[in-house]
Image (cartoon, rainbow over all chains, first blue to last red; front, side):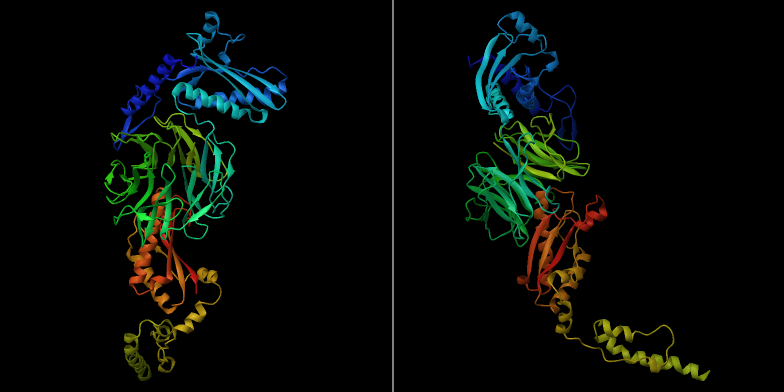
Length: 442
Length: 186
């Protein structure tokens, strides 16, 4: 019963069609406008599978409804809407009465709302424990796609809902969902001149501070179970490592100045960074356990902001050797450097997608910075933002989303959007000073 | 009438006698003021030309180095060097400022200092960290070329993280594109 391969093939074909249409940069009937060789996407693309997600059925008093059913349902609906695989139908159109789709008549009432799939969840509460049974039906064939039971504490029903949503994503797209993932970021919320590293859930909830340097901390990155960042706690910028929960903080010595923009290799064993000796910033690498510092670039120009390919064999970085900051790529040994970006007069802060097929970066031609995504093989580039000053993109672990910072009305905050077309923009932080430089952990 | 005629002559004579001093002495602030000819006629007895004093460096030092390093920084003995947008090349005004700094630093050879590189808010965070490093080092290089011992100097880049002002105006952007000097030891 778990195979449901025709349905999976259908949703995959929709997703592939969406990706393909983005690649040729004609996602909609609306003609995209071109600015300096970059396609600006202004309208949505792709068709999504339509899900009906009625409230968690939980017998009991009203207090139980507000404590368990409502947060569970709201979280599940929000997660599924947020993914770019689904559209969730309006709950007000749900037919009343049975959720049994054993008869074509019953299934027809759900189909009439526009839904193709019914996500039926039923819960039981015993003491402080909740168990939830999720049954997912293909309404046309009236076949069970997915049936699973979950249990956990009543105080964290949202977490149970995130788990259900992750399983649905995995079932329909084959990719791991990101609804239990964490985003690290930098914020000055605890003092305007200091910046520290914070963590939050993927949707911006539960922000918590991880560092306490009372200083300037910049550019966290994550790979291979480690977090790396730059701290000015000892006056000069140095590279530090720590665990994703903030424990085990360790300062690494490089013998260089600058020590900025550290990026961990995919297995976490190496750190690429922007180092400097006598005012000549270059890309360097070192062991993430310390030592082994060596220089990869040797131009007289400025090199900065490295990031690794998912294979660890290549590094993208910024160089101004042609007069303006542009994205370049080289082998991880520092050989074979070639220029990647040719549009715009300032490109920086490139991040390689988890699949290795795209790079996201801060791009500017005129006016403010935006987020651009380039297809690595073809060089085709789409601009995914058009409001405010945007920067510092990072990819979700499944490669479907980009998290980035945007300054609007004087305040810098963290947003996410769909990686293919910039749709589904959500603001994750608000207030609490400036929030920036996000990185998305699995 | 004869008395009035003799006065200007006497003044001219005194001024002519001063010329060698003015030519060989490089602007000692304390003596040029008294030696400068007044525009209003003065009697010869009022124009006293004392030999230019030659203050010894340690005399000045003892004043300048009074108080803490923080107080010295507040007094602003060293001038900042300013830069063009996305540039780390030294402009003429930056060279003038740095040359003045070099002269001061030669007279106060025990001082050590930090050069901070700063950028305006318009560029990206990560590139600007590297650009600030270049600016601080451009200032360091020029000072060492003027004879300042490089071991007295450290540099740090703040990119656009420590702005001097926050307005989105050309005036403010210019304020933030600088190499900023701070004493660290005296």
